[in-house]
Amino acid sequence: MTQDAIVVGAGPAGSAAAIGLARAGAKTLLIERTKETGDALCGGFLSWRTLARLDALGIDLVALGGQAVRSVRLFAGARQSETPLPGEAMGVSRHRLDGALQAAAEAAGAGLERGVHATALDGGAVQTRDGASLAAPSLFLAAGKHGFRGFAREPGEWQRGDPVIGLRLRLPAHPALDRLVGDAVELHLFDRGYAGLVRQEDGSGNLCLAVHKSRLDEAGGDPAALLRALGDGLPHLGARLAYADWSRSVDAIGHVPYGWRTAETSAGLFRLGDQAGVIPSLAGEGMGLAIASAGAAVAAWHRAGADAAPAFQKQLASRMRRPFALANLAWRAGEARATAAPMVSLASLFPPLVRMASRMTRIDAG
Image 1 (tube, rainbow, N blue to C red):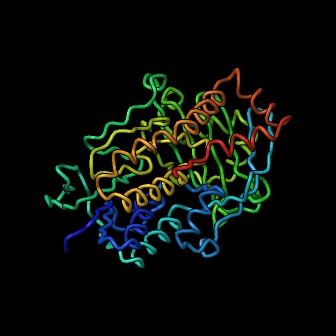
Image 2 (image 1 turned 60 degrees about the vertical axis):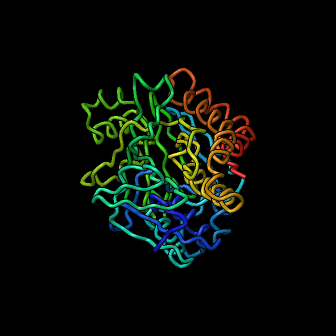
Image 3 (image 1 turned 90 degrees about the vertical axis):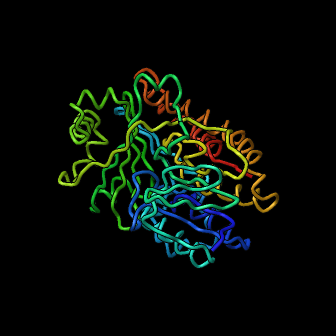
């Protein structure tokens, strides 16, 4: 079958794009390299604005069954603050979220093919590992945080000498975790990194970290050893890690280009989510960027077809500028010994500043 559009990657950005394209009448093929829906390392926090976008896509938020998140809690050493969020958010696993979006894409009429590993984009076609060439007038690249050949994503110069690594440990459901974390999303700040923790639909905790390689090197390159050391030195994080199942592996992804964004593309190629820009995860807007960029790309495609891609990419990059700048500023302050504790103290004294930062780091993609 001749396709109007091919979407590479069936994560939130790709699935949301496929939903919009199929509903607009486009013959859409959504390809995904994994054979089953997994639980991706990154994501799991859905802001109030992202929930509104999912609702507009027809996703049943009640059926998602996620954990309500009503406040943000900051820790730096012994200091802490807690501030109500501007709106109710949700903690939910990527397995649950991705599965719901993929089902909605298929229900809208998009074709979903799994186990198709795209290796390159060339001349308006997707080249796959098995030697196939899939062509369509419009291509939507939504391959997530994984690098994609021919599309370099360089982090800021200040990260290049000490790149950032993403880590994730699942904390099993436990009554103490309910009591400690409750309906908050937590950010634990420390030297050269931070950890975010939110409860998910089954009561488990999703603990994600962004740490510089030098910090991991000090732990002998062992993520579990690093987490134990952090728990020993940070009392609040240690209280949560007391309920960790250390037989579980720590998931990792290397050299994440946090803060990178691009305005560059070619006619017919729409770059979405982390293939358009990687907002620091401290902002909790990775899923927001995925869904918002998909919606904006579909709207641009609907107005002008494949030729709309370059203008769309420039506009998206422009709209990412302020949220990225603020998220980078907060990240750098939070991972520096001299500024992390004062930042938390300021948040405790002036909660409106935290709510303002929460609003200003959301992605408005039009």
